[in-house]
Length: 129
Image 1 (cartoon, rainbow, N blue to C red):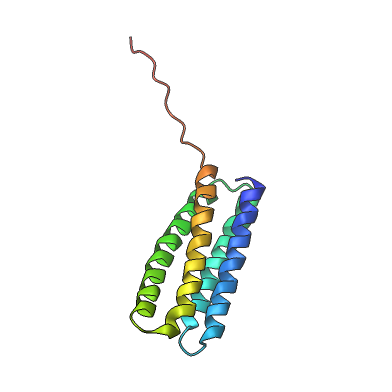
Image 2: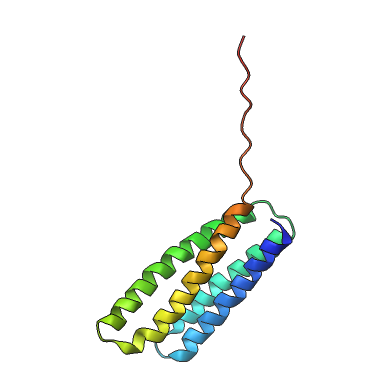
């Protein structure tokens, strides 16, 4: 992983921590999970970035998997949030907006990570005698 991609992962992790904190502060009684998940997956992404900058080879597939999973989760949660807003729960708007923002960040980072994947070596085929 190049240092630029590692830096993006570190920024993404800090972004997730910040969004989790923002979600928690918006509703401390009901949004404790926002702080826990933002902190956990933010710290994990920062760890992937630090390890990637140090040249750890297995980090890129781990970062791709984590970010892909988060993209799916954010898409699902944002959809549920916006459906609640549409159905007359305007108090869900802020959470839906945060989730949509995290979805967008994840969707932007994912192709960058995919480009960092090294292709698996292929066996050269030689004619058999």
